[in-house]
Length: 63
Figure 1: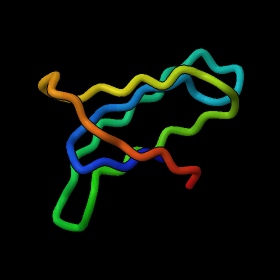
Figure 2 (figure 1 turned 45 degrees about the horizontal axis):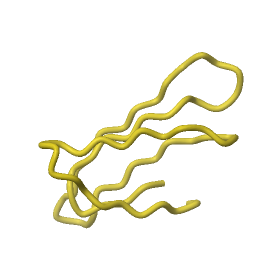
Figure 3 (figure 1 turned 90 degrees about the vertical axis):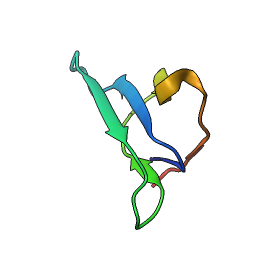
Figure 4 (figure 1 turned 180 degrees about the vertical axis):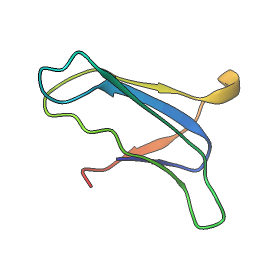
């Protein structure tokens, strides 16, 4: 799970042997920060994109 105070998009390979990429695009709302959930089951690359190219800060959490 990734949390941030600005909009962001996260992309990672899906768990298992599937040749599938999972993407979640999120933005904060009145109830709190933007939260993206992307499951991974092994070491893998996770791509984080921030709109506008100005950068963003996110926090990584196990759950």
